Length: 363
Image 1 (tube, rainbow, N blue to C red):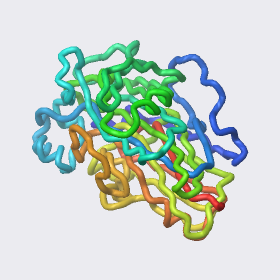
Image 2: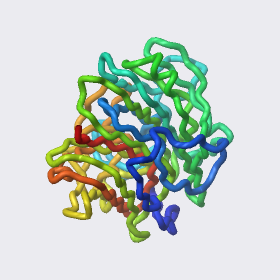
Image 3: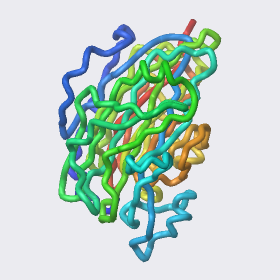
Image 4: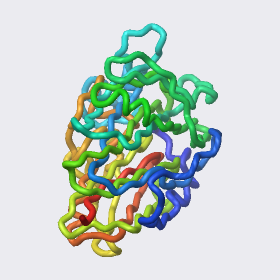
C-alpha cells in the first residue's frame, strides 16, 4: 500500500460484541449474497467440544519487478525483506499448470488423524484496482480442489464486504465448505481464480485465501472454539477497534490461540498492534518472532511466529496478505471469563476480515 488517504474516516472498526456462552453452535441462516462497504464483525460459529481449530492459507499474488528506486530486490522481499506492494509490479502466483486458470496457490490443511470436521469456511479477498480494474461481479466465485481432486466451483453464500475509493477497490467474500472439507480431509488444498488485479499502482496489488476448520477429536482437551468475520478498515488516528468475547470458562494456566486474517498490512510500516485483555485485567501484547508487536499485520502467514504447514509458493513477505495465529496463553495465565481484543491501525491503514479463537475450557 502506498497511500494513507484511501482509508481515512475508517471509524468504528469492529463493533464491540458481548457474546454469550449460550449462543447456538451455528449462526442463523445468512442473507442472500450482496455487497456492503462495511460489514461489522459478528459471530459465525461457536462450539465447546474436544477438538480445536486449524487453517490453511496462501496469498494469490506477489512481486515480479521493482518499480521504486527504494525497493528491495523482489527475490529478497519474497524471502522476508521489508517491502510494500506499491513498490513493485505485481503478478499472479500459479502452481497448478492449468492454462484455464490465471492464479492458483496451495496450502496444507493439518486436520488430525481421527478427527471429525464440524465446520469449515473459506475466505478470500483482494484489491480489484491496480494496473487494471477487475470486474466486481466475479468477487463471489473461486475454484477449489481438495487433496488429489479436481476443481469445484465455490460461490459466496453471505454478504460480501467491498470498499472503493480513489486508490483501491477492496473486498472479502466467504462460503461454508463443510461438506467439501469433510470429504477432502487433510492434505494440500488448491484455490484458484481469486478475483484480484495485477500490475502496479501506488496502492499496490494484494489478495489471498484462508480456510478455517473446526474439528472434534475425543483425545484432545475440551475447548471453546469461535469464529467471527466481517469487513472493516482501520487507520492510524481513526480510533482503536475492539471485539469482546464473553462467556468463556478458561481455567488458570489455560492454553489458547487467536487467528487473524487481514488485508494490505505492510511489512516494515509500523504502528499496527493487537492487544488482548482477560477479564479487564492486565493488557497483553500479541506478537512473536514473526510478527513484532508494533508491526503485527506485516504480510505473514505464520503460527506462533513460524511456518507450521506447507505452502506453494511459500513466500515469507506476502505483500499485503496476513493470516496469522498468535499464542493466547500469556493472557490466560489467571483464567478468563472474557477476552477483549483491541486492534490499532498502521499509518497507511489495513482491512480486517476474520478473527478465530480457541481456548481451553473447564471439564
